[in-house]
Length: 386
Image (tube, rainbow, N blue to C red):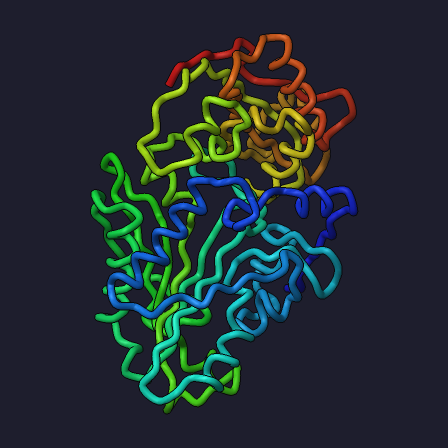
């Protein structure tokens, strides 16, 4: 199956390029950059080499973001469902790993026998993603790659690297790992931190794959190493006890005052939420990520109010009674999607009128059935202080 690409508008591109990268030194002091610096300094203290910091553009080629790393061009990851394409050959980077292949080639050329080189590539990335307290569409990541002798490619060294990173970032929290294959690693694992009894994914890693070295023209008989990518936003949230990823960028003064250090989060009044279910007619198979992006675009300046969106159910026309099809305005070939949308502003209460207006706007934008049809389920808002 060929890849269907949807290109960003000029306005959407400029909006993405204007977002502050919280890892950059010229940006205001922020906990995301503080934890990044602590990790880099902590690795040196643990005996790893001083990191060579890699920064690169937000706009990268498909070859840098996918091709050199071993992705099949037909993979869905390359489609518009997850990738913000700018044109046929360029995109907003989906991973800081896009900065690695070229510098890895150069490092292999310059590395002396017995030398170990550590590369750190932090920065903002761009996704089409689901919406909840752990997910956002512009997460911050950092890749850590260690290049040395072939013997460095060993599970023991990999787990030592993970332990040293998490020992600095979240020293009081246990962690577990499970097998997770990647395109550019061998023996890949996913690492989860245990937080309040729940597992939160914070990084993925593995041994640098021989296939990647070969693709980059690096002699696997002379070089080997470790590849790791971590989520800086989640590590910051876990370190400080921040309950919602939106708080990292919340402009409220009381919130931002707490983003200037790594001290534990002090609760800012958690205002009531408003939850409603919206029933719409849509093209079959639209992912939660695509529906979320459409919802956020429709919300515009109020997108920050959206705390969470879940797809609660999907039904084809054959599964619905005639009266529901008529009321919904379901056209042939469409499906009914039931979406639960939770609104909460971190700084103030959202009025009923404001919530109604936003829900109407979201429903209108997502509904693809007969004009004027469609209906919301459960019209009475549920308020919550959780």
